Length: 83
Image (cartoon, rainbow, N blue to C red):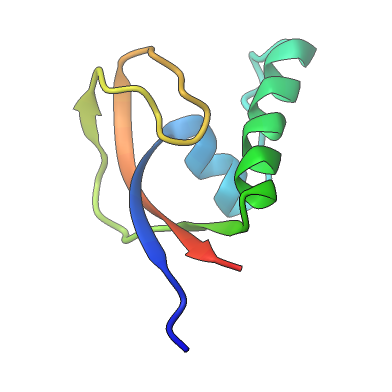
């Protein structure tokens, strides 16, 4: 049985949280909770979030596929893997 893998575009904050469990030091407690909640929402949908390749990110105004931030910034390839 093959498990589904979906390519997504994640922001720097989501990439660092996924890779290292690090939250941005400048975030407020509310912003930290929002980011963590976004990851929980993905897990509740039956997926694990995985870091992508080591390629450099590319600037985009497209919202992050995980936390939905609309701030412009680098987006990195990440993956949702079916649990």
